[in-house]
Length: 89
Image 1 (cartoon, rainbow, N blue to C red):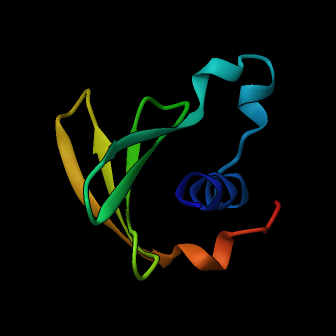
Image 2 (cartoon, one colour):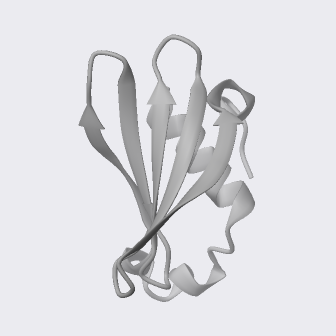
């Protein structure tokens, strides 16, 4: 559920055309899991990461952007992951 929703969100929201020639430059992968939250990580072609923290019970998903080259973290908003389940770009 978490991976599918975040992947759909990322394919709708971000431009993946640059990844056609180099697919490893952008990706979505599962991160850590706790009792209450799934973490899903999106890597942009710019090298920035967006961590999605999906609440297992409610589907409320907090986003945090991390730019490793600058060591900067910013809250990036929230979404309801259920809005992106079974949705294709």
